[in-house]
Image 1 (cartoon, rainbow, N blue to C red):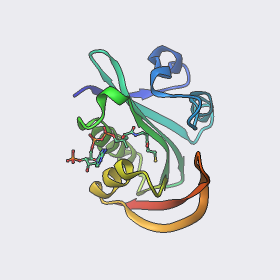
Image 2 (tube, protein in one colour; image 1 turned 60 degrees about the vertical axis):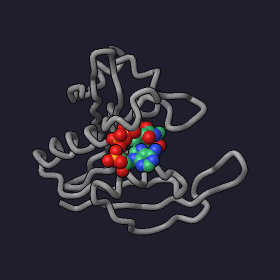
Image 3 (cartoon, rainbow, N blue to C red; image 1 turned 90 degrees about the horizontal axis):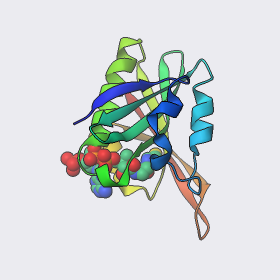
Length: 147
Ligand SMILES: CC(C)(COP(=O)(O)OP(=O)(O)OC[C@H]1O[C@@H](n2cnc3c(N)ncnc32)[C@H](O)[C@@H]1OP(=O)(O)O)[C@@H](O)C(=O)NCCC(=O)NCCS
């Protein structure tokens, strides 16, 4: 398993994150990079022997963090990278006195839902027809994990 590294706005270009992001599927790397210019933005990546394996981006307000995006490179999926990225970044957030994490996920995103449930997130609500799909719209689920 690779090691966790903090992504700062100064270094974001050095991490070659482009391979993780496809501008056809939001959020774009540009929009995520802009988060880091805000005081509330922070992000971590898992760095393996062949480069970045996955990244997670947060907005932190008071004692709550919101996951804006988490993405693992296609060839690294189902190897524990996403789980490690979340558990290790949660540990960093806990050290900064963050007490809960909130997120929104597409209701059909089975992989992400299984990951969040494994990490004890619970569903708080449903936003109907929130996301666009190729054929119409789908619901968003809001989830929270308190420490
Ligand atoms: C969701 C995502 C981050 C998971 O990353 P990953 O590194 O493949 O996940 P892990 O290998 O750490 O899996 C941890 C747990 O998540 C669940 N899980 C992950 N992928 C799964 C899948 N395809 N099907 C079912 N469960 C899955 C399992 O419970 C797994 O535990 P297990 O291995 O003991 O069964 C990855 O699929 C991804 O990048 N998807 C595209 C981007 C995305 O949808 N992000 C979420 C936005 S809200």
